[in-house]
Amino acid sequence: MSKNNEKEFMDFRSDTVTKPTQAMRQAMFDAMVGDDVYGDDPTVNKLEEEAAKRLGKEAALFVPSGTFGNQLALFTHCQRGDEVILADDCHIVAHEAGAAAVIAGVQLRTITFPGGIPVPDEIKKRVRATGDIHEPKTALICLENALGNGRVVPLTVMKEISGIAKEYNVPIHLDGARIFNAALALGVEAREIAAYVDSVQFCLSKGLCSPVGSILAGTTAFIGNARRKRKIMGGGMRQAGVLAAPGLIALNEMTKRLGEDHETAKLLGRELAAIKGVTVEPVEINMVFFHIDGTGFPYERFAGAMFERGFLVNGESRGPLRMVTHNDVTAEDVKKAAAAIKEIVGQ
Ligand SMILES: *Cc1c(COP(=O)(O)O)cnc(C)c1O
Image (cartoon, rainbow, N blue to C red):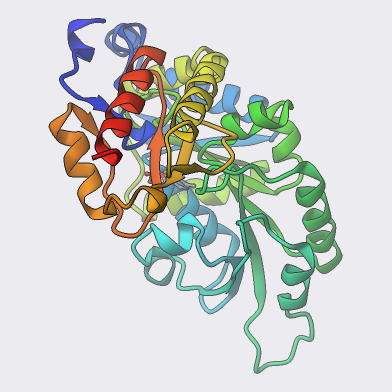
């Protein structure tokens, strides 16, 4: 392990905690740069071209974060007062600090999907197509894949929703923060998922280990409009090639190793399932969700007990608990974590 990646705690809070690799740090050092607001940064241009190609889209835009990319998509697809149909527990609704009201000024029409997998008919029912002046206009449908609950949406479901969207001429934005994890779990290329949507955001900075940044991809016209709106949002970055350089490694190299994270997650799932009183939800990507109700150990004391043993996990007062595997945790770390959990909940 390199000095830069030296760790004191084994950190299972999220894949956002991944540190850039040595190769990324070197690429940042060596990056050719220019003023990207003038379109002069060759490294940003290369990342945008390669990301677009990888997703099967015409064009792409480098943005500072996943939240930025999602909100920029809303801002670009919609007019103020328009309505967006999406799941009530999706990232845009639950974890973006109400940004849709502040930036795009849209109304969010949320749907509860038990288990998280979207139900096409429920979306269809909510599309407003009468043109009645009393009604907001349905301007966008937002989907997520992989879902924040670690599950993956089957392509058949994506396809059915795409058909509904086309029928009503409503675009779809995909929050694909972990689209490469989803693709791996589905056994397809990311572009096969992206084919069912008009725009897609994915994070370079999570399991792909880049320090900063996301990509928003879509048609040339859409990305042209988004480039202007990114400027409005203060996201026009100058010598951003130092951030795009690790982004290229994230896209081209780190996507190849996500299988290791899925394997360590499955290992953790198996180890936890073997502990009496612990129940584990199906593991599809690099996230393990589990319940400790059966052990009698209180949820609110779990994170603290793990901390004392050298592990970082997010606290949850009611559960389920979540642990995330990534480039900076090994199978050995996973086994140690499972052993610590067994000790904690067995007390
Ligand atoms: C992390 C995440 C985002 C946002 O990314 P940030 O870079 O943290 O703003 C969006 N959607 C999902 C599903 C995510 O997991």
